[in-house]
Length: 277
Image (cartoon, one colour):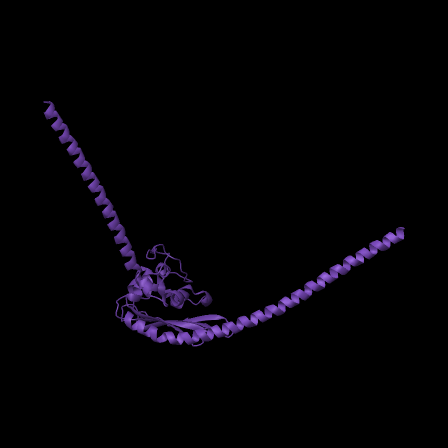
């Protein structure tokens, strides 16, 4: 009897081992099948990326005449780009007072995406003759090499005598954007300033260049919305002021009505006294 019990236990163990082996085998087969399906998904994603890139390239060319027409119209508006930058909540946080003075001479901004789009882009800033530097155009380019490694390069700014201190007085190792509350409030505390012009010589981390991405992806597609921010804000303020004035007038009317009612009561009391007399 004891030997039969041992045989039964042994058979049970073998069955359990067989079940585990079968489960492991099925699990491994499922993993291999999932991997094959995932490879198909990845191939489709790559194909989709290629098709999307072709569409982007096509429409990028189609947009160019409209960008040019927009630039021609913007040229008719003084300080358009300066106003758009000052009104942008992230860019405005970067500008110090001297930046703002120099950017008063900014006449044109242009973003040029490279023909294949995915390899990078270039941002051109055109300036009128100014007391700060001799450059008519200052550019910064962003590139992705064949391995996907990002890099950047920019125009060397030819500062006029005494104006290079615009950078020398500001210690910045890497330009980072911090949105300012209200979009136009900036901290100009000495010793804790960044400068827009430091950005041109900042190539520490081209893959995380926040200012370049903001200009390319946010401001450039529709700069008018940022140019109009101040006008919209002023209108809102005016409406609030008008509302306050209206409320004030209403209170005055109520006070005047109240005073009139008191006068009527006093006249009524006097009339009653006369009748009693």
